[in-house]
Length: 117
Picture 1 (cartoon, rainbow, N blue to C red):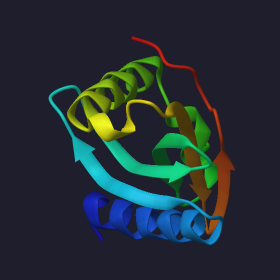
Picture 2: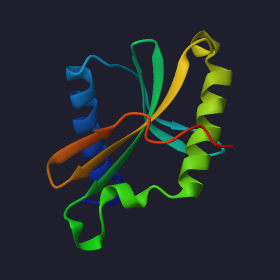
Picture 3: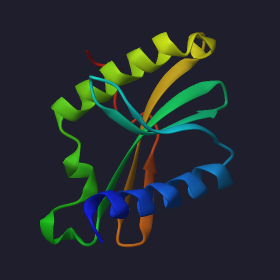
Picture 4: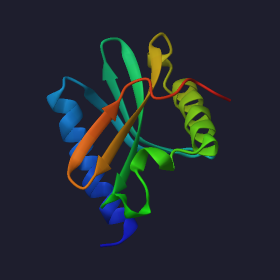
């Protein structure tokens, strides 16, 4: 399976997990010239920008280790673009979450990082 297909499979699993936990999925794989956001969801008055990281095992490191400062800045810039182009969400609190999958185990981190641009 190529990386895009693998990513899609695990993003689907995270979406299922989020829906089960009461989130509403707004968008997936949102692209801008600044970068991409894997999942955009709503919960409890927050708009959540979710980065999904998967590792088959820990031989190459843990998924959490794959979130670089550069990736954080790209997500933040893309989230600002999303809000500017979807004004109906501009009054919501923004939150940056990370879903890490190691094997078949999902770890979900709310407020994984602060807005940085």
